[in-house]
Every structure is written in C-alpha cells, then in structure tokens.
Image (tube, rainbow, N blue to C red; front, side):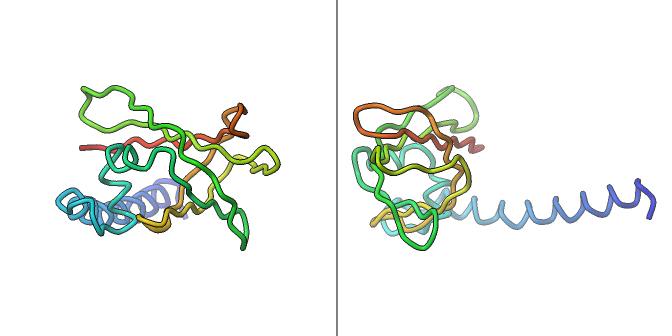
Amino acid sequence: MERRTFVIATGGMLGSGGLCGAAELVKAKTAPLAGIGVSQVAAAGSAAYLALVQERFNVYPGGRGIGMTLLSVKRSFPAARGDQFSLTFAVAASQSLASGVYEIEHADIGKQTVYLQLAGNGPEGNYYRADFNLLN
C-alpha cells in the first residue's frame, strides 16, 4: 500500500469517529446538570466540577477502588472560546498511582475515564492532576 493511500484511509477513519462524538457533545450542552450522564459532565465543563470540590471520588487502578478527594478546579483562559481547566485530586500518602489513564467515579456523576498525572505531594497526600480542554 502506498503511503499516500494509507494516510488518506486512516485519516478518514479518524475523522469519522470524531463526527460521531460531536453529536453527543451537542446533546450534552443542552442538558441540565442534574441527572446527566458521564460524557455529559465532561462536556458541561468546569462548572460541573466546581460543585464537587472537597468531595470523594474513587479511582480504579485495578479491580479495587482507591479513595481520592477533589481539591480544586483551576480554570485557564476564561475569556477564550473553550473551557480549559485542571482538576487536582489528593490520594492518601500511603497510596501511589503511576501517571496514566484511569477510570474515576463520583456518586453523583458516575464513571469517567481521565488521564491522571502526578503533580506532587502535600498535607493531604499525593496530588494528581487531570487536564481538560473543551471547545464551546
């Protein structure tokens, strides 16, 4: 197979997957926050997480969950066309996670897959950050 043919074929597959998700994001933007699904919470943006600061989440590095607390929601570029924000979580110092993709869960919003990156440690334990960049 020629390189050009391969690039065109795989680019088309990637693009079509993105279009399917776009419809879901449009639906999510119009839903109220109460009783919404997991993908809708991410699409709702930083406002959905502000109400959950200091609440307990579970992270699943394997079959068993580890408790963590949402410490902060930090917004970046609030006047931009998108919603860029970071969530900072604290995990007990006795627990340790490698930076990577994890499933997190909250009692009110259900499960979501995020990339958690080690961001240091402090009095609450080890800190982990999840970054989001959502278009409006």
